View 1 (cartoon, one colour):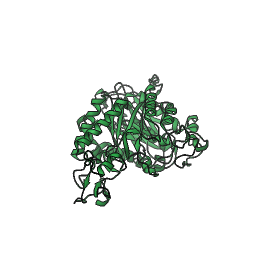
View 2 (tube, rainbow, N blue to C red):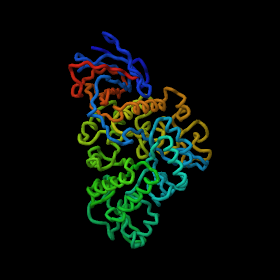
View 3 (tube, one colour):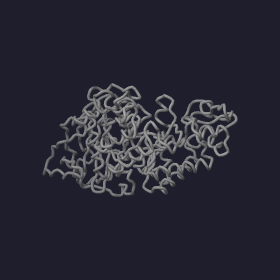
View 4 (tube, helix red, strand yellow):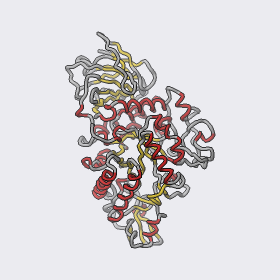
Length: 547
């Protein structure tokens, strides 16, 4: 039995081989300069027991140079399929004028940071003029007052256009957070509806009494009075889980939000992240408050409008549910271009805490087979969940393993600002250096700066450290962008017989990549069994480990 063993401590580790017979030369560098070193062949004798040794949280990336399957590679158009998206909260990114609040001009100043990391698109949290009441939740901007104006805290429409123009000039796509389920109750639309203005009186969901039935929070729990709120001006109840929810049974509301989408696309925006979209149209009390046929129908109409307005624009849906529900929004290719996989995000976190791969296996095994694998977009953290480092604990090896999985799974990876250096605090400002306020502002930050993380927990320090988490992200992003199999290839699981070892193939046009990850905190020896992967048991395959 041939053995491959690791001699390097980092996560992307690079193996040497003990092998009989002639040694092949290493592969030439790939388009991004990555080198794969010759390791033991996969032969008929080792087909069901190819042996590897892995250190705790080690991830091996291995190329098979003489096997490919173009039929399992998505070759359709769509820039988002090749993208690495950087999610950021403008308020906490960089303050250009010293008032303690991040802004568009600050984003422009720090755009080169994002391209240096390797990201090719930016998703900003909502930038519309929105309701702020001093609380952190509403500071995120998810209750819009005016869908045609930007938040004055961030700058003017011209400032936004300047950001967009600079992003496009350096090859970065611009994705906006589009919140159409609900808006602010202090908007002109809502105030007109309260007064039963003929144009707006039916733009929201009103009832003279709390309707009968099992009304609750649409994701479960709560009582009717949690979603039906009495309005003293109109003297009726309006339905809402946030702000005031729009009445998409009204044709005028439907038209208006198609118009808003076209407006920003015409301005130059490249795509939308659709917030809380599964709750858009209620058809009655529970279970008709989420994922209704009416919601799906309007989302298909909305997507068609996006493509009509700007054919190369994209959409990604927030459907916070299991992948079986997420899959409904594909709609035979007429729905969203992507939807986030919350299930895989939680499974990765659980795997790196427990050391067990079975949650991840369960996600991949249960996904509908008629949905493209790259439809499911991946992330490790966002503004709605605790930071990864807070969820699984400190330790660069585990965080690097998480990064390696994110960048080698099928589906576009999304990186929330600060993930790349283990920033703590969901809304915390970026920590650019070790100066006052960590270089975020020359004034007083809008939110208390989270000081945990240690002296080296900032951008400047981590860029200088070649073994840092930040540089691991940079290398992994570059690797993903340079390998068609990692961007476009389907995944098939490889049997390991070890609960701590996750292994899978990613098919390519000219070659194939094997990823083997030790999710546990102990050294492991594993025998890979390539049955049911598409490889032939009677052939010899040439393997090379990433240097």
